[in-house]
Image 1: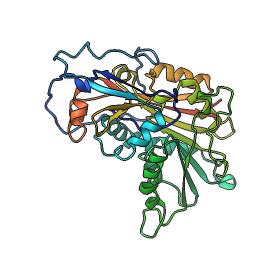
Image 2 (image 1 turned 135 degrees about the horizontal axis):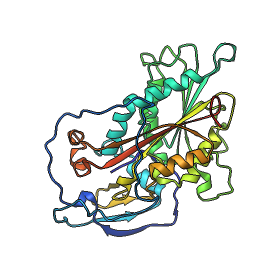
Image 3 (image 1 turned 180 degrees about the vertical axis):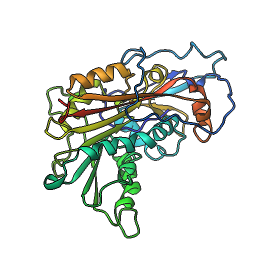
Image 4 (image 1 turned 135 degrees about the vertical axis):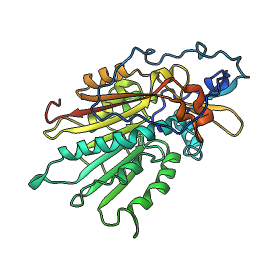
Length: 353
């Protein structure tokens, strides 16, 4: 499974190899595939929260796997930044099941979220630019969705910033995203939309708890544009301790009279108990960085401790229909398992902190 993030490394000197049996190495049933029928609840639909493995817990994938295991896959743990730099060239094309789930859920969730943001941006004489930030943007998979959002007002400047610590991922993002905002004949030719991509230490307090939690960008770059109206951070949280993640989010969205918002998606802890982010290189070795299996409950509690109002949550299991297509071979073993969750929060304004 793969995840759209590349951030700070929690063990920068670690580099070792081992051999593990993953769900991908275990025999599974071969369900009949069908065209996916995805349930898309509204933004404010109540979602149940179940007890899941504790944060950072690692379990052996054995309980519901009845077929004998195949030979185990060698695994090499390296610094997370190095892993994503290596991964960048194939990240968008390696049959990523979790990315496919994330994309499917964001088809409705992201437009609903952005509509919520627009309703809260000052109007009239207080009208100003709209600023959004993709925290851990990777190759720009969801940054592109921000740039392509159909309902941006024509009388506003839209500023989109993508931050990531992997230069390899950012190089891919630059090539992918720049055509969306520049040149005649683009979808945004008639609008003033700007794009900024920066290599950054997105979560400085991971290695230095007393550090300024704002993302650290090169001194030669201009500061991040205040105020930021909304942050998205998709499939990033797995690699970051919860306190460090929300310290940065809180610094990016400080309390202010107008409400600000954040949308977070992540690997579900049910999936994290069995696997973690990684990819198989050309030598057949599974490459991995640091990973945590954060539960939805713990994520909600940490957001509240950081001063955010939790507006809603959503969880997603893999369905039989989801295994059709390029992610089918990877995804079949996850049918019935919760693999994804989302949390959206508000700060400031009505009911905010």
